[in-house]
Length: 234
Image (cartoon, rainbow, N blue to C red; front, top):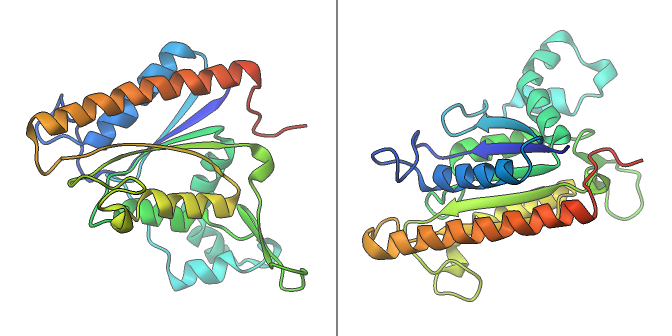
């Protein structure tokens, strides 16, 4: 059994194809989870909606607490980090993270950025030592062999590498950079486009994304059957 962490970041509460004005990214992430549960019904599922319930933004007090050694923290510091600790604990438990993250103004939604800021934690997800030779920073999750799937939606089209709007895509590249910094480098991305255009092009893009999700689930499940993921390898 593995643990799957399902994240949604859309400000829209429903799913397209079911609810009026529903979210495409929620539709895609739900489709992934449904296909996964069909293939591996015994796996554990965690869910976090950072679109409808965004984490608190990082504050000066949060930073002070996070960079204070745990044994020296005052009670208020533990309170300041409580939500972040919960989010980090979920991430550490997860073997596979599936994130529905729409593109807002070429980047990630504010709720997902707040989530990122809360899980990038010194001493928990990355290490830091000024006296360390070479780079003073290092990832702490590498040996956990976690995988990340980013399922996105875009209003325009042509955001893939080499396409007309690739330079303006700050969703997948940003997410890959941040999670890679923590040691999660096995990242897969699938996106639907043409939301602002609607019509047949949008529907075709959604259908292709769902088809690609089914293929990705098959690929990941097959790799688990050959070499199971371990959150805490011996």
